[in-house]
Image (cartoon, rainbow, N blue to C red; front, side, top):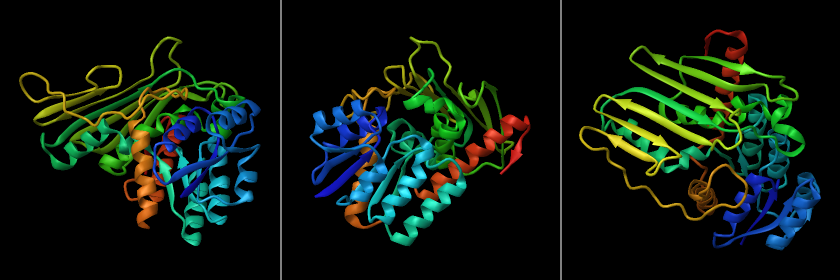
Length: 339
């Protein structure tokens, strides 16, 4: 039996807790959260022991795996403590606040021999996997243009941590990081980035809250991404992309049914995708659990086989942090920056 401790019982932690119930040979045994109501809910829903802090839960021992679903500024210290305590770690994105913290996490994993996986979930999202396969196979010819969008309302979180750059890194760092990671996964690191965005007070009101980035690879194709946390109440969270190839176009929009269509002459085709396994009731801004379950399955499968995750390595997750940090620098310098 793999015994799991969960740090953080907000919307992401609750989503992971629900999905952890679906694995054979895996048991959620403890939950840590600073909020009494969250601890009470965890105990009521899952019958687990609860702790006021992740540090105390890890120090108590008797865990095989720690899931880290707390504010970003706590990722590195908790992950390092957990690995040094003998636990494998699944850490939600973004990996850490900067590449120095990422490097410390990687060093701890190497020193302890423990597995560290970062939850860059788009690498397990069927519509994004479909696009990567199309790019790699060149089924529709060479990629000409790719545009990505990830927009929604403001996130606040416990103690408004999302709105404090020193704790959450801003939406360009926390939300847009998904699309940045997908771009790097599919196309590699660009030669340079040019980003620009609208900014509010970075200590209390979210910092860079709406941004656009151009990823510059070469003159024969273009890649861009938009991210925001400023849509009004009632506007549904929306993730989408449009990929133009020499012989076709692939379009994904999370608000449409079907979500994915391929245009290659004639009527559009809706490729068959894996069915989501369950509806989530965690408060996350998505309604299906499939990709999050897929990444959990992959993580536990790697543990059982004694192999390190390859779909998303800690080094790849650190590179995403490096590129997003460069995007923030580009926004503030108002110029393109070489990577």
